[in-house]
Amino acid sequence: MNHPLITSDPKVMLGKPVIQGRRITVEFIMEEVETGEARGRKREEIITNLMQSYHLSDKEIEAAIAFAKERDQNEEFNKLER
Image 1: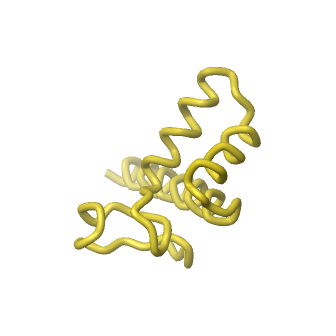
Image 2 (image 1 turned 45 degrees about the vertical axis):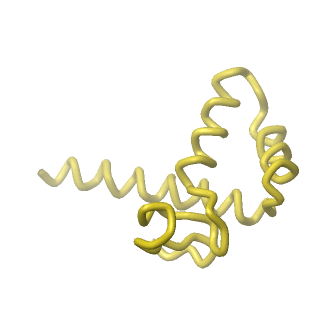
């Protein structure tokens, strides 16, 4: 999975994937999106809130979402091969 805006370093956030140059994990972004959607908020509203609250760009948030989606697809594929 190659996402230039997402990095992973064992010395940063226990090696969890993060937004490059920040300590904001992909996991956190996805939790915010999923929680917001579960409460009936639109994704656009959630992304805007993340951008304002954490000074993220829409590209950074979309990269985190794409990374998580690709990772989840890879995990599902790996389960099928077992």
